[in-house]
Length: 169
Image: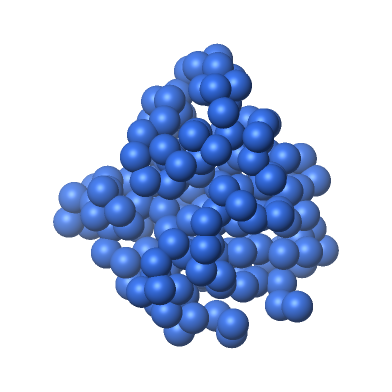
């Protein structure tokens, strides 16, 4: 098994210790991955998120996973694409890195990422994939023993194909 892998499927069903939620700044649920994770985890997730006082773009926060297969949810807030002139690439990189840092802090050894910011936030998909994979690979250079498995979970076959170009699947 490869340590970094891409899969096509439903992130709410993955057997990993933590799933990353492509969250909005309120952390109170939304559409896409965010809505799916909140629905699958149940109402307890929303209750816990209300106590977190939101999250800045480029940052991440941890909650329990409740009814998910995953024990934890790491809520990462990616940037809304505004043409790339407002630090969007750096903010996207930051939310992947912060998610990994939180995982290390909590001794989480397996984690699954969705395609952060590429839906309604309109981040260009090819650029987002390059940033995601490069950030994870770079992080692993200094944290090689901290993870057993890092998954990029793609809902669509198109996204899966994009990730497959950048990592060995």
